[in-house]
Image 1 (cartoon, one colour):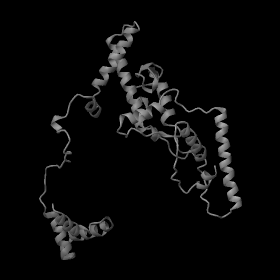
Image 2 (cartoon, one colour; image 1 turned 30 degrees about the horizontal axis):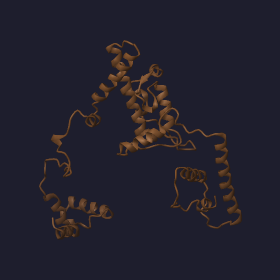
Image 3 (spheres, rainbow, N blue to C red; image 1 turned 180 degrees about the vertical axis):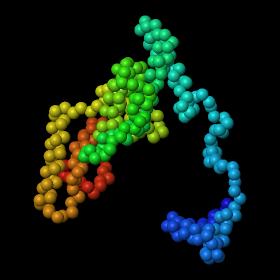
Image 4 (spheres, rainbow, N blue to C red; image 1 turned 90 degrees about the horizontal axis):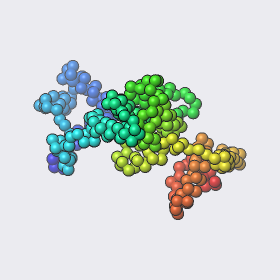
Length: 302
């Protein structure tokens, strides 16, 4: 279609705007009841909508010019298995590792026990992935406790076939979460501490495997919980006191003056201080802040 033809089509249909939807729907309703009740222009328009041939064949989105044809896609690979729910390759890999661990431990594992251990591992890994994908939805982000925090069914071990009797049975998870083996109780404790506390982490939409692995490495694991020393807690408290005192001073000294206070966001001051200090240790030479209105005086002062 030429550019002129596109312009002509736009001019003929420019009135089909969302703001006019209610008005056009009303005219169409009048037309359906009595075609003569609308003007000739509208009658011709509504007639043209019905005049087009009806294509019974469904329309599918075309592939990109560089895409591999659908009939040439590889089958039985890991990506296809992940999309179709076929975990055959994953199951085979886990079964081989479980058998190898049993062999080197001098433990004779029966086929039934091997199958059960493999199934437990796959289900545990599915549970872990569910927390990575939607654990942030269960994060405790309501300090007043007014929100109804319902745990999604995919975050419950029961969804994957685990009962209370299974919670303390060691399961092979192949160093996921930093552990070779773990019980369901331990897995849930780590996942909830990582994804469901006062900070939600949402990263599974990232397409780069390296970037996702970088985030996972820094937040997942039994020892990745942030713990402050007594000195660290005192330093944070001192910075909060400085921040709050500055706000109170400005409020008394310049009562009624617009000053873009930091009320409600006082934690930004110690957070920025730590970012700047840690950045300097890592070699950062310059930091430019695109500062919001709220708290700009406090940031400049502290």
